[in-house]
Length: 84
Image (cartoon, rainbow, N blue to C red; front, side, top):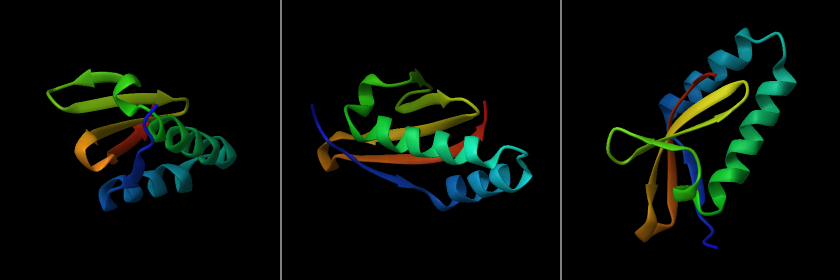
């Protein structure tokens, strides 16, 4: 088990905020975000599905994120967020 630091890019944070503001179920968005952070902290290269090279996708209803894994730095970068 390898622990990673999860960071959200400004773009991903902005997209998440737009989703949250437009949502009628904000607690679900908040919980999905927390679950994504927890899931990506431990062995993120075993979570989600690969898409286009080094990019990965993970869905936790009602969200889907695209992220990169940087094993040498033990870093996960969430690049974008959208509704699942």
